[in-house]
Length: 424
Image (cartoon, rainbow, N blue to C red; front, side, top):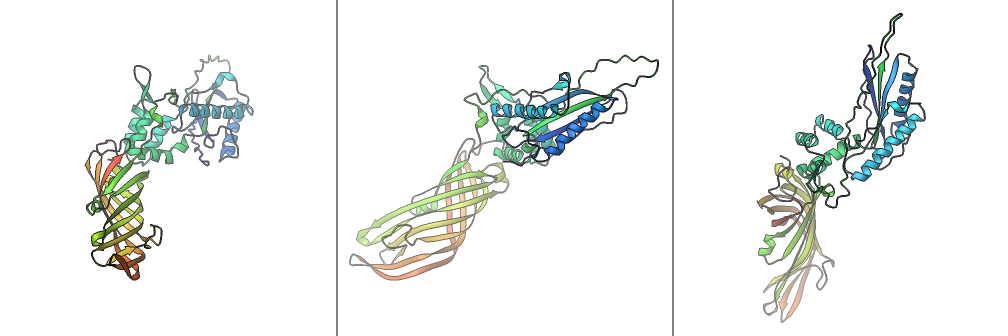
């Protein structure tokens, strides 16, 4: 994914008296996963020109003195340790090489902070945003250690893991969408200058040694997490459910369904039923098989607290065939002797439902769907051991076409109704 440019930000002070300093910070954008400095990328050309011009103007000004030039590289936290460190270092080196090829800078004023995940910058962005539940994220960013190891040196916890688990991944997704582009792909140059003292005639001024001002960026030494086999950093929330419609079970139609949570309150589900009962002596048939697919959007307080819980709306499509006859006239949906796909009956519509938690990993889902049911069906009567065709008709029905009271088994890491830390 390209097109993510870190916005430039500046802090300029007024140089009016001896001892005052001015810091100028400029961020240069890099494409994701790339460390080659591209002047045509985003607004890089203008920013690089600004940096070079600024340094040259300071060097030409006899009243100013360069104290420190700091080059930094950064990457966003969703990547692994080794990749992030390599990208950050290469981006920093690319920017430093570009600048020093155009402006002569003494080695003594160059600094290169080691940190490459801008956690402090991320905390600042979250603090001034309107992100839901930002207080929880800021608390983790500022108070949870970046890595936690047991007494054997094995990684057991991390700041990143805590962030990914907040609101069942919603917080992490929000930061990824809104903030990561402002801390990734950027190498930062920090320039510090101070005004030289004015030496009056016949006055000798002894100048105290200048201690380089610390860089504005926070140096964070990140320990390798990708080399630990049990690293929790690669674990992402996953939610799914298995279910059965108890209404169909009561009607002797075995069925099973599965539902996957896609994120952003969306899920997709599929159901299959198969009941093929018959009693030839009395010509009684109770046959039906087919399935449906549905896309759902979850909404409301409960849905925000935990995926696959609370209110949901959606759209669905069904395909099925049937044969019902109970000692009299029979009704067959679909081609006689054919399969589900031979002129099957079908339905489509909109649905509403509510999934109610009843146990740690069990919900009961109530759903009603309204839509259109179409397809061809056949009327017949059993006679002398045969089935005599009476009529072929087409179904055109608008109304309820789906009803569920489903027992839902929640699966996936952390996918339980007792899980804390969801959206409150």
